[in-house]
Image (cartoon, rainbow, N blue to C red; front, side, top):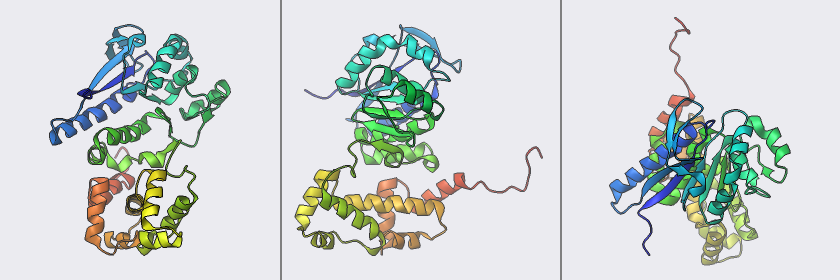
Length: 340
């Protein structure tokens, strides 16, 4: 059977919902679908449904009115479900949506990616979907959340958590990081980088940098691969050679590649390239080193090769990336004072 022509996306609505926690992810996903269609007319589009207590208009906290397509309990199979953030005390929403718990469990158990924003995570906790799992929520609600849901493994130091197909995001600002991650899974690395750069590359953190995940590439139990990862980190600037690394570990290059891919989902060379690019991003953002010096710091002798690899991963040249991030990090002095 052919896959559906669209990714099915649904968002829940309630009067205390924050509109941006619905509209921002939908705009990112819609932009990604449009970019993908330009590259290939066979790419899947996106289809949105809004669900509430009943079909019809719902006025959100901001006064914006969105029109629900159907009752939340009537939602069919979805690829992604967004549970928006709740303004202030979530208790009213918790009480009014308690009968949605069964449908939330069904959707999650059937493989829907479920993303809850801020105190929207309470709806997942009420449905029992976070018991024994990592989760985060809005910082102002940490203590109350921990008391109310003691079975949830609250990760207060992380803005994003993932446990299988269940995602929690601590704030509206972090929803973009998660959406870029989902775009990469749906449309590939090139589209995700293009979308990331379109939606303010200067303020984005990578999903890996922000997220607490179960089953990340450092949570495996292959001791040789863990040693390999540490050695690559320690020897980043020395032009780390995979064949030499395999020899140090007493493995053939082929065996190291196979075990590394099984443990992390990527080859040692791919993992090393991501590590180098991420380190280069930090240096471009926070140091005054030249692009050539940064290339050398992260293990490249050839600056042009470094630039090509950086563009493949970041979707933008090192120089343009620095201009973008510096434009936000360091506001120029104008010589004027407020109100002058």
